[in-house]
Length: 276
Ligand code: IPD
Ligand code: CA
Ligand code: CA
Ligand code: CA
Image: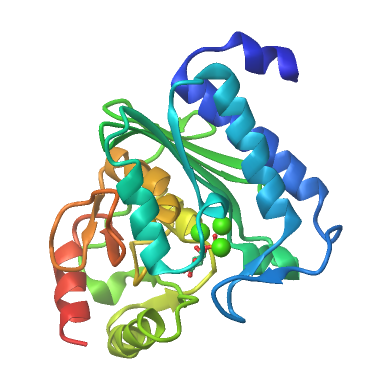
């Protein structure tokens, strides 16, 4: 309720509160929203619920931390250039909240219960709090830098598979069909025969949370944005995994072509993607 929100000052408590409030509201609106609008292409949807969720989160954060900066997907023009610019504009921020109000909008629109709310707080460009909430399963994934990653209070750790052939790996089908999708499709073609199996479930943030929880051995995708990855990156790192780009570089807010795993398969996965 509202009182517990206003009373708390801790960053993590506010992030958790925002994610659960937004998640509950999103869930209550399933199947009850106007025809979605198209953004970048016919593969890229947005509903009034995406916008309402972002407004709710932004207002709550603003009440607690009026001096903090805010970057949310629905406040940015669609397309890779605009998102790079938007990130550039807040690159000097001391405290920056990075929010995806619904990650998995296509699933949401179709009633496929795999979507999430993703909220991260970065301090001088480094993620210090990451929260991903799955309202369909009521699963709350929370990480604080240096303090571990938890699902509903239970400590998470990544899985133990040591080779691709034992691994369950997830990826995505990017909405950008000019550049990102063809590259990702070549990678899928190369990887599918080498892993135990592939999953494409439609929420990058939740895929990252599943790597942290040990339910997936790894995840990669091409052309993602800061709001898809920021919270999940800390979940994976704090659960003992590795997050970087596909060239072997380490994670930062500008990473678009992500590669995350339990760590044991990181190099084998990177090489397999590079060969595709
Ligand atoms: C999308 C989801 C999807 C991924 C797309 C993202 P959105 O985010 O994370 O899994 O494949 O690349 O854009 O638009 O639903 O927030
Ligand atoms: Ca979107
Ligand atoms: Ca997203
Ligand atoms: Ca979104």
